[in-house]
Amino acid sequence: MRWALFVSLAAWVVCGGCGKYEPAPMAPKTPPQPAAAQAPAPKPQQPVAPQSGMTAGMQGIGTAIGMAPIETAVSGPMGVAPASPSSPPPSAPPPAVKADAGVGAKGRGYGPGIITTPVATYFRAKEQIAFRIQIPDAMRLYKATNGSAPKTHEEFMEKIIKENRIALPELPPGHRYRYYPEQEELMVEQPAP
Image 1 (cartoon, rainbow, N blue to C red):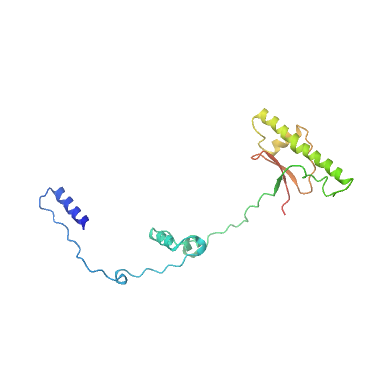
Image 2 (image 1 turned 135 degrees about the vertical axis):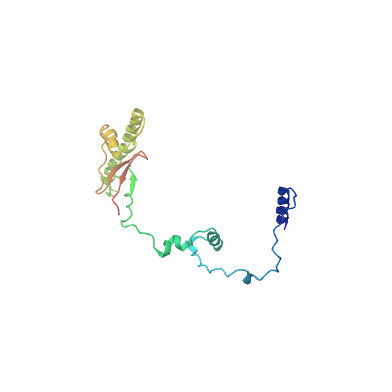
């Protein structure tokens, strides 16, 4: 009601009070009708699957602003299922562990004993020298000289391992050394299970 008075007053001011303005007739007041008589019954909506995370209120808001029902978003328009990839997804990279003492093939599985324990310790010590002393020193020297670590596996093997004459321990069958430039680490990739 206030809004209608405001519009009438604004129109009278714009017109300059000339008397030419006739306000629009207001709609007659009618007694309130029962809710069933005012609007047709809303279309029943399918319940939302519990795993979708949408509540009934969210679905109602989505419908009000013109969003497609969740079933359409999941199954595609008019029941057309989304295309499935024809090729299998790319396989995960093989599992890798940091190259450290104990990854070599020699010195494994001897068990404890008066002769076997010193033999296993000998091979383990050689691996520790290579992985914990020689490679880190060669990397520090390379970084100081070139300003950054090697950028590829091939560069690492050439500039760090070959030029510094580092003897990497022999690996078990199927295992291989791989340098990861983003981590600046030498890793041992294991065969996929």
